[in-house]
Structure formats: C-alpha cells, structure tokens
Length: 484
Image (tube, rainbow, N blue to C red; front, top):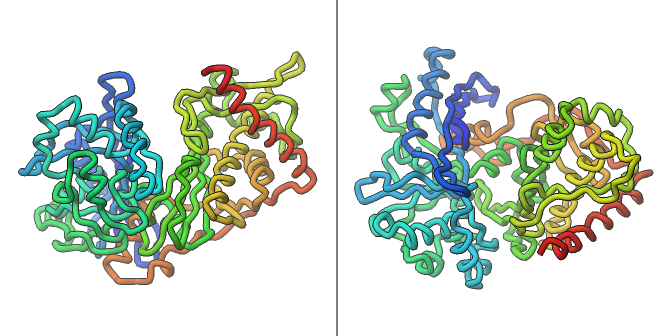
C-alpha cells in the first residue's frame, strides 16, 4: 500500500492506494481559516497536525490492518504559505496562507527588482512567500528576528512526520526565492529579504526520499517505522501527477472555483510578463506552466445566486447544442484577474445588454467569457513557447458538456474527459510515495487516466468564436481605462 496526504486550505485528505494504484480508501478532517483583518488569511500549523492525525485515524478505522502494508508516503499541500519556526522548531506566529494579500506593497517592491523575474521566471505576487517575510520584517520585527527556518505548509507536516527540514522543487518554486531554471535556492534573492540559505529547508526532487516516518507515529497508526516519505509536490503539481500530466505538451484545464490551464514542459520556459506561473514540476528535469483565472465556476455560481437558479438549471436552459456567441459579452473578473493581466483591482462586466437579453443569454455569456479567459492563458503559454494539441478537463464545471464544447471551440483544441476516478492531489502524492519507495520510473507510474469521451471544437462555429474572442480582448483595456 501507498499513502498520499494532501493538506488543503479547508481540510486534509489521506488516500490509500495499492501497488496497482487502485484506490483502497480515504480519510478526511476539516480545517478552519482565520481572517483577523481584511485581506488576511491564516492558519495555526497545530491544526494541520491535529487534522492529519484525525484523517489517518478515520482511514485506519475504515480499513483495519491495511496501514501495516504501507511502504511509502507522499505529501501534497497548498503552496506559498509562510510557516516561521524558531531554533527549537517552535511556531512563531500563525502561517500566512496563499490567499493572504497583506504584503501587496512588499510584493510590488520585490517585483521592481529585476533579479526576481530573471531568476524565478515569475512576477512576485502578494500570495508568494518572500513578500510575506518582508511584511513580517516590517510589521513584526520580533518574530522576524527569531526566524530560524521558513517552511511551506506540507513541509511543516513533514517535520512532524520525520523530524527533518526538507522541501522539494515544485512547492519551493512558489516562494520567489528559488532559481527555478537551476532548481536551487538563490542566495541573492534570499538576501534581498534579509534571509540566507541556512533558514531554508534542504531541497530534493518530488520523487526522492525525503525523510522516514518516526517510530512514535508508526506505532500509533499501526505502520512500520522508517517508511520512506517522498519529497512530494505543491497541490497543482501533485494533481498533475495524479492526472498523468507530466510529459511535454500534456495539459489539463481545471474548471473549479478558480480556473487553471496547466501544461507540463521538458524545459524552463518563463513568461512573467503575461502573469504565467512557471514552476518546477514534481519530476526531475521537468517544469510546468499555469495560466490562472480567479473566477471560473465562481462566475457561474455568482449568476446562480443573482438569478435564484442552480448552476445546473442555468446550463440546462442552453440545451446540448453549442450556439454562436451572441452580442452580450462577459468579463469574469469578479475578484480581479491573474493571467494575463495581473490586475487585482479590475472587476467583471457584462456588455451589449438589451431588452432581449434573457437569463439564458447571460448564462451563455458567462460560460463563453470563462472560455475566453482560458484562451487568454493559452495565448500566454504560446508566447512562452508551449504548444498544446489537446487538454483534459477536470473540476466541477467539467460536468457541463455545453461548457466543455465552448472551451474546446474557444481554444481550438480537443478536450478529453477522463473516466470516473480520483485523480487529485492526494492520488498524485500517493504515486510519488510509490516512486520514492520502489524506485519505479515516474513516467511508468504517472500515467493518464482512461479517456471516457472527447469533445472536439465545433468547426462551424470557429469563426464566430474567434470574432467574439477579439471583442472580449478589446474590453479589458476599455474597462480598465474607464475605472482607473
């Protein structure tokens, strides 16, 4: 057996798979987020330990005796969090999470230093770890003075599991301290935030062994002491391992609350000017790029709340046959936008409304607007040198065939729908645990799931979608100028 542990913002999942990668069972425990001030988002790392213990206990209760067969463990977690420890590994303050925006001033200052984009291949976003430390230095100097180690959330779990300070490339690439091309800490960038490499964990690849399970925990959970724990991955890279999105040109589109267009690369292809994330992948000598939409299914959920109709009811009104985009356009910038604009102040808009604009017309505009936002990400990836020939759809929004038809036609790419199964971050983490324990070839382990169906672009509507995308592209600068 192999165990994957995924530390999410709202909970921890423990997933057990067998040697054939069939899912045996899972356990879950919830987490709370603290928001003491506007723009703040924090968690007490002690919660993570409590929740991990509970999730494993639930898994053990439902599958008695089977944890004794676990031979490897993999870790996944939400990225960018700043977990600050003193010299005795005591937590100095609550962890500042990925969606915390308090450090926007510090992020802008670091991003103005050309070395950051040059070495990391990314804009310095407020959500990244480095500006959070700059904020702590400026606002909580006593805590900053006590920092002996900075750990990412999943790596704090690793410290508890193994007693070691270790991270891996995919998660560390989201700190703004990693030289992403060379896959090593940058002493230059650390010095720019008054830190040095001694305060960072050591680095391994996600498929490497990175510590062993402590005897005390092994005894408590009915496992063997010394089980190897893999380096693991940040949540998106772990999901990619679960989806088999690990080879050059492989990609998935995630229609969740936010949206992600994720592409694996065999080389380092940064494009920070278009707000594309370029990070190390969890596999050696592999990188990945992500275009990020801040409001994907959130846009449809917003319309659902406004109209009083469920999201499924709204999309059902459109029927099964894709229609040409109408005269109403929608910008899905309800909470700003990441790729390609890096604009936290921009907000969404409907344009072209008339007396004839029915609820179904607005729903179609929302679905098309999100599809065009994915097209923006696709164009940003193309500028960076990434060519895609197809994508796999995941996430709750992928249940709408109409939406997938719109995305396929907007992208001009076939969209594959995987067969039912659990291909998320916990599954990817379990796969990394299997690789670390057995030395298996990562490409043999991280296979794509069977494709259940493929949605082809509607060639007859390709021209209409291209024209509508051109209108969509013209709206951002116009709206930005009007609201500046």
